[in-house]
Image 1 (tube, one colour):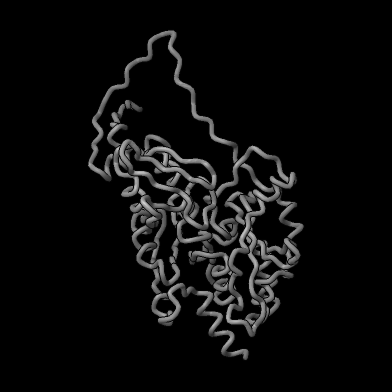
Image 2 (image 1 turned 135 degrees about the vertical axis):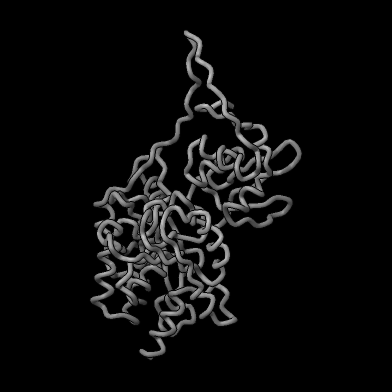
Length: 347
């Protein structure tokens, strides 16, 4: 294919084994005779994108959202690139070189092919989030046991943490994803064990994680037809408010809140999960000094991922969680560490 003076061998690019490409960009695991990875077309807590490398097949398909496509399609969506940039990256990475080429002049009377239409991006009205902002939720109840109540209230206002009633439970915690322009991209809600005597205290209840955007569309509270952005960091809207602050980037919003309460001199942001360490997600950090603090089980993975994005910001990857982690806690994170420190003093 000839594009803006460059020639891309799209046949060879789309023939690069899609599992190899996904392993370079994200985490991949085996599922039966195929492999799966996180779907870049939707918020994917549990990998649902199947990678096919059978005879006559080299593509991906998500059974959760129904989307997928070729190798080039996957790279474009995963990295937030256009077609040309995805082809350039694949060509350079896998030695499928491009050659200079002069694009032919279109003959009179011919028309360009149809453009692929993407569904419109949908945002949640700020007023709907404003109605939810509250400390009366399960995670804030946990935080009140470990930090000063006024500090918790301050963090709730800064990050716009909310409470939501769902399925006979009135204290789901709502984490908003607000982008650098102040637009509410989506609202994630989770339920936490708030019993200080429980071994699961301050940890998310399994199976209690939902996205309010999709839920409100189904309920008719938001219009259908659009898609909610998945490339927004938790706390991203605070970057312009604290332009001189060093940034600490963690995986989960809960970790960011713990960090913000314990070390308020830094600005704490979260990707949402470890699979969201992508160029399109981290782009708003451009030019900042950023300490990247992955959970114990993702240090090597995040260090490798960050090494490909050194042009965005001054990144430093910290292995603090892996160094502090007890042997019996492979998923140890900064919130676990701070919780142990605070609870040992309080009780």
